Length: 260
Image (tube, rainbow, N blue to C red; front, top):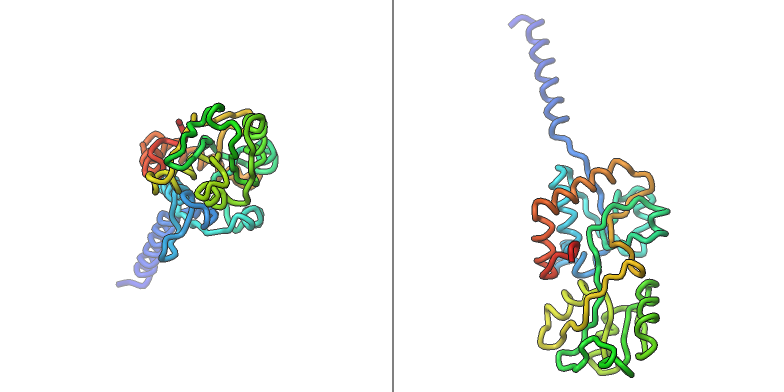
C-alpha cells in the first residue's frame, strides 16, 4: 500500500478511536453520605455502602447517564468535603432550611419527613394528650426544629427528655425510664417498628409541619453549582415519574416518603 494511503488510514483510525473515547466518556457525580446513618446510608457486614440514599443516588446517576462515585463520609466532615470539592453533592437527608439555602445550592425536596411517636408494643399510649399526660417523652438532641416543636406542643403536659442519640432513648424506653420516643418516623419505623413489631409500635398522627420542619430534605451542593443542580433536578423528576423512587421508598419504609 502506498505510504500516503497508510497515513490516511492511520489518521482515520486515530480519529475514530478519539471519537469513541469521547462518546464513552461520562461525567462523574461525586456524592457523600454518612456510613453510620441507617436506613439512609450504612455499611453491610462486608463493608459495602448501601441504604435508601445510596440507592436513590445510584438511580439518579442512571437516569442522567453519569458515573456515580459514592463516598462514605462521616457527618462531622461532610461540609468540609463538599466545600473542598472532594464531593459534588451531599445526599443524606439535609433539611432545606433558610440558613442552608443562603449558604448552599439545594435541590429538592426528595424527602418530606414526618415525625411520630414510637412506644413499647404493650403501651397504652396512643399519641393523644390524655395518654401522654404526666409521661416522659424522649427526643434526639441536635435538631433545633424538633426541640422547639416538642417544647411548644408537649412540654405543657409531659416531660421532654433529650438524648445525644436516638438509640440511647430507645434503650431507656425499653427499661421504662421514658414512656415514648418522638422523632423521625422513617428512621424509627425502619430501625425498630419494622424489625421488631412484637417489641415496638408507631402511634399517633404523622406530623409534617412546615412551620417547624420546612418543606423537606434535599440534595446539598456548593453555592452556585448550576451544572449539577439542574442535572439533579432533571434526574429527580425522572425517577419519580418512572416509579423508581416509589420502588426504593417502599422497600425501606413501606410507603412513599416524598408524597406522604
